Image (cartoon, rainbow, N blue to C red; front, side, top):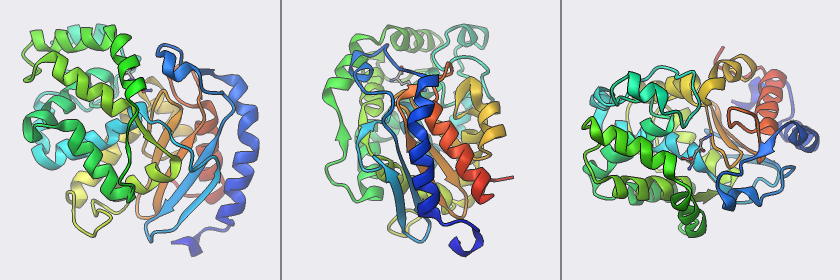
Length: 309
Ligand code: DON
């Protein structure tokens, strides 16, 4: 795996981390949840976990941060593993071209969210996992603990409460879908699991290791299959086309990898067959993607030649 790259990976990660703080000035830290607004914009970390189990990192790659929507990559995978393609009767899989929290499209499309990564779609995925398991957040947390080997991995209760207190738009999306019969569990319960999922605290090293099953075509850390090669391909495809919202085209153009961003400034990106990258830089562009993170991934894939294209 590593022999095929012409660059020294640690040197490259260190160069990227050194250049990252200058990128932060082009963005703005999310302020719609007070608990997120307090983070300094120029912080940065980056980790690479390879399919053969090595972890490289630079900057604050072991520093925990709020993963926010990056968690949606994992809930989609867990939901698909249980439900299969039937999930797509309730949520689409096309890019939205709209902001992640948009209400407009949902009305045009009769309460069926465009894809599983916009907030409305992620709420449907949580609802399905709740029905299937009785405890969607618990299922997600157990999965992430197993994949990272971090038994204390958890959500930040202060962030989760802050999300709930400022969650009028998510509540509106959830109630709207309930009015179309596209939520099976009570709105308050779905929102509670969704807010805790977003408030999960993980480092770049944790995220990169947790995402490895997507690089290993469905094979988990313990060697078991979460799902088959086709399902892993499908999750990666939706990550590529929908994982960075209305900037998914630009992300594919610049980075050339499946990826999922979150408003905490994290991005998880998959190198199928090779490994997983995770970056963290809290300053965001207008679509809600980390400016330093996208720049770092762009540099990484350009210098290594590793992309899906
Ligand atoms: O639903 C929200 O508003 C947040 N908890 C998560 C949003 C998010 O991270 C979107 N990503 N860029």
